[in-house]
Image (cartoon, rainbow, N blue to C red):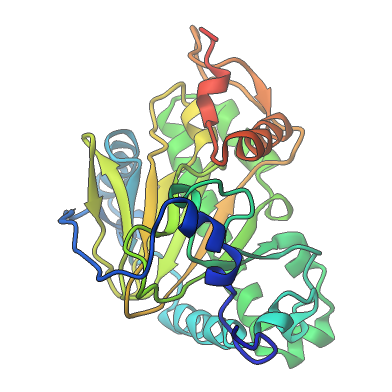
Amino acid sequence: MNDYTCCSDPPFEETYTRLFHKHNVGPTTHTTTTVEERDLPLIDLAQLEGKEKEKREKCKREIAKASREWGFFIVVNHGIPPHILEEMTKEQVKVFREPFYKKKADNCMNLRLSSGSYRWGAPTATCLAQLSWSEAFHIPLTDICNTSPNVVATTNLCSTVKQFATTVSELANKLANILAENLGDDKKVSFIEEKCVPNSCYLRMNRYPPCPKYANVMGLMPHTDSDFLTILYQDQVGGLQLIKDGNWISVKPIPHALIVNIGDLFQAWSNGVYKSVVHRVVANPKRERFSTAYFMCPSGDAIIQSYKQPSKYRNFSFNEYRKQVQEDVKQFGHKIGLSHFLVCN
């Protein structure tokens, strides 16, 4: 038994021994399943700041097209300085290097997060397909906004997280407004501005430890995101995969670029115009992987209503959606998602 008073890794093997035994899975040599590596749509956001209206409009059309056809795209020249991204990774590595017992504490490295912010594995997993070989800090932006100035000033991690969240939040609002405008409904733009305020959004710092023994374990199980929009900054290890045309494809990391993907709420809100796509993270047998995701969410009482009729989805609140997801995970071990809210149901 490992001594977790000093070890930084969560006790995956000890905790999930039952699952490995249930499926008769033991340590094995990794076999490589070939997954095609394809280029996601690459969008240069510098065009949005140019003087030529034609280039600005072209960039907006590219964003909307990628959201319709892929549900994922990569942005460069996004306005977030490289030093903020690099500092974010640097500080993230530090906090994940802390002993496991400290990370479970609510005040790890002076972050003073809400109870239960540190998460790892998959507590409700009933089979290996539902197990995620990863750990994360789930950070509501209310925690960041409410951190006292003295703590922010004296703690690099707090300062960096706050700076990262502020800059990425601005980018998320810009992209969401472009997508709302593309639907041709000005009311939708005001909804984004009124309901998707920073205090309802959150960050998640992720670490995917090496998984050298078990070839069938995912770093993060296949899922869609339960938000409007997600913006991801990742290191260069790779491992992110998504479904395109019925097949898994692998996403190649690009230094200092950000990955944007559509969430379930935007798919429902756009009446299926924009696509919330299933994605996963593959565990690496030798290298750990770090990423930070920003999730753009509305307030809990916000009503998600399709922008046009007839609607594919019934109206629902964000609180109702989250409650349904939690019930699904508890009952089935995974999320069902928008299927529950189809009008035909």
